[in-house]
Length: 309
Image (cartoon, rainbow, N blue to C red; front, top):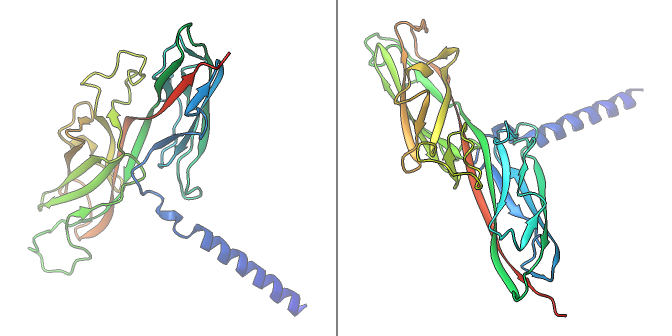
C-alpha cells in the first residue's frame, strides 16, 4: 500500500513538473513587433501556369501578435487580392474576411493560423500567348498595443524629507516590442513634488502602414486612405494603478495622435497632490493601451502561358 501511494505521489510530481516546464517562458508572450503575417502557400499560385482553366491562390495568415483579429463592420479584418487583369483572371471573390484569429497568449505562444483561398478562372484572349503579372495580397485589420512598464512613483523626488526609499525615479527603456506592430520604446519620467510627467515614446516597428482604425479606405478597391487617415493612433488608456491619466495626455486630438516618420511621443502627467497616493516612494505599472488600423502586403510574380494545341 505504501509503495502504491509513493508511486502515485511520484506520478503527481512528474505531471506538475512537466506542466511547469511546458509553461515556462510563456508568461512573457508580449514580445515582438508583428501582427498579422501572410505568405502564399507554395505552388498556389504556381510560378508558371500552363493553359486556361482554374487557378487556385491560397494565402496563409498567422496572427503573430497578441491581439485577436476579427472582421468588424466589414472592414476590421480583411484580405484583398489585387494585381490581375479581371478580363484574364476572374476570381470567385477578391476579398475574404478574417472572422476570428486569436493572437499569442499565456496558453498559446504561437498564435492562430488560417488559410484564405481564392479560385480564379483563367481565359487568355485570342492572340495573347503569355500573361505576366504580380499578384498582391493586402491585409487590413485593427490591432492593439498594451505595455505596462514598472515606474517609480515618488512624492518626494528631491529628498527634502530624510527617509529610505523603495525605488528611485528613472527613465525606463523597452526593447523587443509588446507583441504588436506599434511599440512603446521608452518612458521618460520628469518628477516634481506636485506632478510626475511621463513622456511615452511610440514607434511603428512592424514594417507596414498605420491608419485610423475607423477608416474604411484601406480597401485597395476603394478611393484609398487620405493623408488625414494615415499614421493615426488612438489612445485607449494611460493609467497608474486605478488612476486614469488619459485625459492629461497631449498632444492629442479626440484622443488620437499622428506618427511622424513612424514615431511619436506624448506626455501624460500624474497630479501628486490630488491623486491621494501614498507619501512614500513605490513601484507601479504604467498601463499604456493604444489601438490602430494596420496594413501590410505580400506579392508573387506569376506567368500564364497558352497551352499548345
